[in-house]
Image (cartoon, rainbow, N blue to C red; front, side):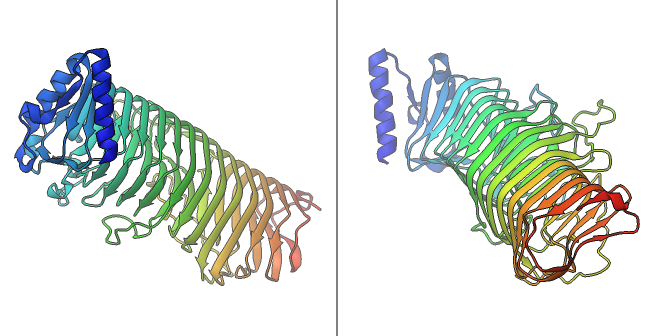
Length: 526
């Protein structure tokens, strides 16, 4: 309450100094705060009047029911404490909007509670609430993509510049809570989101935006939480995310799934991923499918991702990277979509507990490796408990599949499976298991320039061999610490295996290296 009063006082003082009336209270335009009267026209009149000279549209305490509002340049919507902007449950109160900017989904997503296109210097602030009442819009019997129709976003900003969303609480969107499409200079801070009333209940979607800062936010959603997308040829780039607490039944931190333009120069740091307070799920699992997902499947370029200082609790798969070839076009005239590229990723200082037994995976596809991936100071504890000593299952390529961290099922590696990769560096990694697991800890296939250094395996990792290498070259394995006696440390297969060095490792094993018949003797460097 005090913060809202101070804000209004500051605006009044500023108005007095500059000699201009920049405050527009929606009550003065006929809005009624009874939660039953539709106030669309009154609120829009306040926004339109404010946009002439710029200023702040004030929502005082009370419940204000409305349909679509069009936010305009140089206007701030300020929701005072105990003010609630409530979305109408009548779909007729949400007119269709077709942005000039074309993207995947522009034929079936057309509605939003608050909409802005090609506006600048717009903001939403305050300690109030926006409630989309999205539970009223159910299209579960429709087939894709029609199932997305007639489910309004809460916020939808397209090609806008200088956007701020601060401090508000948002809940109950019928679709994604916020969609920022092709916007520049976006600042989102201090918001809280609880979104569990419908399908596709993302917390926030940054889509082809540039120069974005997201900080100090708390979100709990059924679908993905922090989601960075690229549903057009425009990259999402120059993005900083820090100091957030995220919960999702699906993916807490995600680049993808749509990746047409790609992702460049993204830093995510100092975040906590924790289980959702909502235990009933629409998608996913109560604790979440993944902590961090980087998924490139529709072309595009992923280049320059830095993720640091993340605590991840209870999700099925803490870390997942995927370059695939779903090749979904965002326009009908695009023709063949080439395979994208995936390179230059650094992930440091990750502490994850309660991971399931599926294990983590970093995979490209044949001829298209993920490249220049560096992980350091990683601690992950898995449930373990999988018995698998012989006849490890082949992992299908699934090149065209949706990139989900559970897509391969239980993997033949208990901790990490790497395939079709180049220039991979793992250092200071600790894997532990609650129950005895007899799968190899790591399996690497078709990997060039691989450095596996200072890796520690807990006492419940008890495979016949600890590290499997197949068709890998220029490999260095050193500084490992293995707590349980095992039969073989490293098993090497594949005629393309070459230049493999194993040295300075600490453990009790009968045989350091087991070499397959298809491996040249010169491939191993003692």
